Length: 136
Image (tube, rainbow, N blue to C red; front, side, top):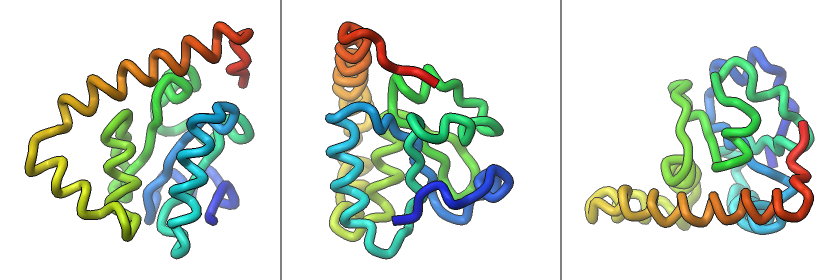
């Protein structure tokens, strides 16, 4: 699994997608580990923000925003967040590619963003209710 062996200059011009995730969230970590297991070809650079928050600099993503919802950077250097981050992951994983086309065809982005927004707010609030252990 390709992780944070890249320096910040290499990250600014990514040749592969970058996903910034909250490694301190058990729910998030379980899902990311599932995707990492499938990512045998190391198509995605996974960055745990609890270990490398400085990797956000250069992308105009605040630490708090990245902890509130999943963020990524596509190979063109565009920042994506929320459901679009999942779509970025899925389009680079063999078992999930077809989902991306299906979601676009059925125009589910808006509904999925609403659902993800509720889950992301709940997760963030729950984490802060447990002592707000989201630290830099």
